[in-house]
Length: 392
Ligand SMILES: Nc1nc2c(ncn2[C@@H]2O[C@H](COP(=O)(O)OP(=O)(O)OP(=O)(O)O)[C@@H](O)[C@H]2O)c(=O)[nH]1
Ligand SMILES: [Mg+2]
Figure: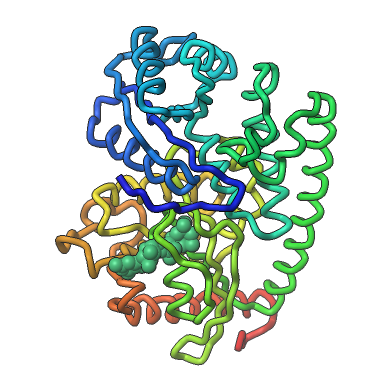
C-alpha cells in the first residue's frame, strides 16, 4: 500500500478508505483487476486505502448491494481501523447509499466508482470547459445520490472530501429546482463552447489538414507520446486521468506534410452514460479525427481488455469507421512479445498494430511512417473534394 500523498492541499485531510467488491463475475481475474483499478482511483483521488472487502454473491442485494452480514462486518472494520470512506466498485442507487451509510454508521461516507472518478475529474479539470463538464456530470450523477440523505454536503470539518469537491461543491446544498436550472444553464454554456469548437474544426477542415487523435485507456501513455513527438510539455504522470482537457499540436511528418495531433481524455471500463454525455464535446475529438491512435499499456496484464473497452467507446463516439492504429505502448517494460494482431484482428488491419515505447522512442519511427503514408492518401482525397491539393 502506498503511503505517498497523491493529492494534497493545505485544507484537504486524507481520507481512509475501505474498498468493497461484490464478486459476481465469472471471470475472477477481471474482477480482481477492476478492484486493483479502484485502488489506484482511490489513491489518485487522495484517499489512503486501508482495507478491501470482497463478497462472493451471485446477485446484488437491492437494498444494500452487499449482504447485510457483510455490511455489519464493514461497520466493525471501519470502527476499529479508523476508516471514514467506503468505496464500492459498482454503481449504487441513491437508496442503497442511504441504507449503507445508515447501517455502517460511524459517519462513514459511502460512494461508488463513478463518484470517485468524477472526483478525480474535479481535481484535474483546468479549462473553463472542463470545469463546466465536471459540474454538469456532478449535478446529473452525484447530486441525486447525495441530496435528501440529511448528510452535510459541503466541506466537512473544513476539508474537501472525496465526492464533495470540485466546481459544483458550493451548489450541493441548494434545492432540486435550483439544480435543474443550473443543469439547463450548464448545458447551454457547453453547447456554445461546442459550437465554437465546431467553427474551429470547420476552419481546419477547409485547410485540408489531417487530424490525428491519440485516444485510449487512461495511463496508457497518450500524453507521453504527444510530448515525444511535439515537445508539447503536457503533464504525463503515473496517475489515472492526468489529462482531462484535450491538447492539439502541429506535427511535421518526414514527407514535410503537417498534421494536427490531439491528446485526449483517457477511457476506463464502466464509464456511466451520464459522463459520456457531459464530456461529449471533449470526447468528440475522436469523432472528428481522420486517424485515431488507440493506445494501450502493453505492460499491463489487462492490456487486451483495455483495447476492448477503448474500441467499444470509440464505436459509441462515432469513430468506428475512422482509420484506427492500435498502439501497444510501454514495450520497454512489457514482458513478452505478444502478437496482438492475432489476438484481436477486428480492431484494425494487421499492418496497423504497433509496439512502441513513448519513453524510449522505440517503434515510433514506424508508427510515424504509417501516419505519413495514411495522411498522404487522406489529404489527396480531401484535396480532391475541396479543390486543395497541398495541405502543407
Ligand atoms: N516504461 C514506460 N513508461 C511509460 C511509457 N509511456 C508512458 N509511460 C509512463 O506512464 C505513465 C502515464 O503516462 P501518460 O502519458 O500520463 O499517460 P496518459 O495515457 O496520458 O494518461 P491519462 O492522461 O492519465 O489518461 C507516466 O508515468 C509515463 O511516464 C513507456 O513507453 N514506457
Ligand atoms: Mg494524459
